[in-house]
Length: 255
Ligand SMILES: NC(=O)c1ccc[n+]([C@@H]2O[C@H](COP(=O)([O-])OP(=O)(O)OC[C@H]3O[C@@H](n4cnc5c(N)ncnc54)[C@H](OP(=O)(O)O)[C@@H]3O)[C@@H](O)[C@H]2O)c1
Image (cartoon, rainbow, N blue to C red):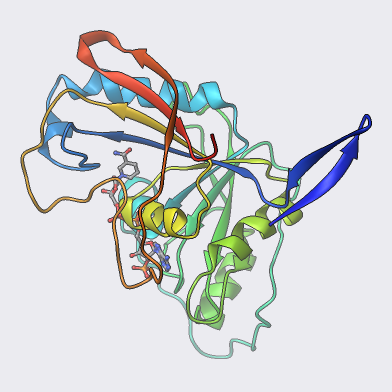
């Protein structure tokens, strides 16, 4: 949603949500995961991915539950006490509204095994401690909400049973002052954002390797979450040749 604001006599459109950049790396056949990433040649492009992430200077990035579990909680399962947990109202919980950077985890039913409220600096290009914000549906258990509160993880609700990402991103702007959000996969989450018309820019690193497998996840996947599938136009803004035959392409959705 947008509103119009007068600035120096001119009218400009102001987004009620962050500007959203989908930043991804794929093989020539559009795969975001696969054996090609295990090849030595891919290491250079993975490093480029991180460097380009830093160039955007966003104060928040978002990933789906599977990516967070693969790369950050490493499948850790919580052993939560279910007895004597009071009913917790399904209202948003802001534990830190002044963080330098936020890591946003889309975890509809509350499965991620966080044990602290931040992701520590994990490479040279992400050298800031990032406060974790969980995006939940109201189906998340009281025990899980109590755990998040105890360790100081913020959470917001994006729907009763299904997530509405338009609501989610407006909350991110209003509650945490997030003006520029980097959406970083996986393919199912990207597909949902594409479907809701929430991608302003695509930052795509093309790795010159064809993965060759037919069943791994692609850049934008479809799923039962998606209700209104349709093609989406992108317009080329910039293209940069990377070493060793790679490309960095920037596309926008509004010409
Ligand atoms: N190449 C790259 O640039 C890149 C970048 C990021 C990630 N990756 C890779 O991508 C892989 C994972 O991708 P993925 O697409 O399988 O998983 P994903 O998008 O990371 O996570 C999918 C999960 O997020 C939740 N979710 C996503 N969209 C939802 C929606 N509209 N409504 C409700 N819940 C939603 C669901 O969680 P529940 O199942 O709990 O309901 C869903 O199963 C990982 O291996 C990761 O390493 C690659």
